[in-house]
Length: 314
Image (cartoon, rainbow, N blue to C red; front, side, top):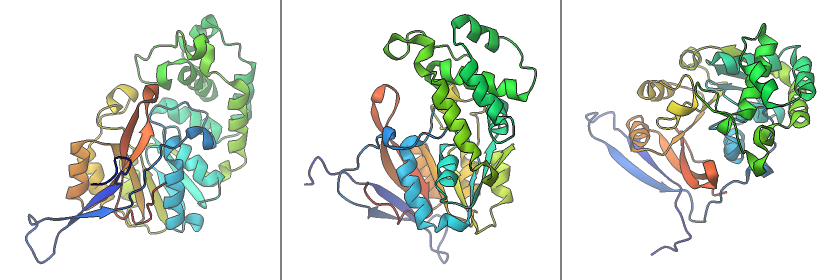
C-alpha cells in the first residue's frame, strides 16, 4: 500500500501493431514518479500578459519550460493556435527559449489587443490605461459604445477583461460588484502594472507574429514541419462554453490533426473521460497536473503529448 501522500502522474500509451488488426489495442502504464506533485504557486511565475484570462496557463509555465528544454527549442519557432492570454508565447519568447513565435486567435476582440500590442500603437495603449479614471460611469461609457478604431477597441477589451467577473469576455459576462477586499471594479485594475507589461512586450515583439484566424488551419498548414513546437490550449469541453465566444470546436478533429504533427506538441485539456479516450485512440500519453481553479479549489488538468518522457515530478 502506497502512502496517501504519494500520487502518480501517469500516462496510458496506446500501441497498435501494424501487423495486427487496428481493433487490437494494448495499453501500457508508465509511472513518472511517486513524490507528491505540488500545485504551482503562480505568484512565483513572471506575469507577462496584460490579460486576466479565464483558463490562463500561468500555473503550467514550469512544465512548459521543461517541455521546451527537452525539445531543444532555442532555434525553433513556437506556434500557439489558440493564443488567448498568450502567457506561454510571451514566456517562451521573453525568456529566449524559442527563436520566434506565431500566435493565432480567432476571437476578434482578443485579436484587437494582440494586434495593438505588437504594433506601434502599444505605447498609446499603455498611456491610455494609465490616464483612464476608472469609475462605473466611465466604464459604462467605454463599454456601451462602438470603438472608432482598432486601438480604442483594444483598450475597451482590456478594460472589460479587467472589470468583468473572472475576466470573462464572452457575451453576458457581468461586471465586478464587490471584487477583491470590497474594492469593486478597482480590484483588478492595476494601471501601472499593465503599462509595464505592455512596454516589456515591446522589447521582444519583433520575434512574435500574430494572425487572427483559424487555429485548426494553422496546425494543418504546419503539420509537416520539424522546426516548430506547438502549444495547443483549446477551449475545454466543459468550461469553454461559458468562458469563450468561440467555444464550439471539433475536439475529435483536433486530436486527429495533432497526430499528424511532425514537430513536438504539448496539449492541455480538462480531465474528462472523453478527452482520455481521444488521447488513447490517437496513441498519445497523458498526465494529470494539479492546479488551483476558481475559489482556490484544487483540481487536476491533463497535459497530452506523443512523448512525455521529459516529465518529472515538480
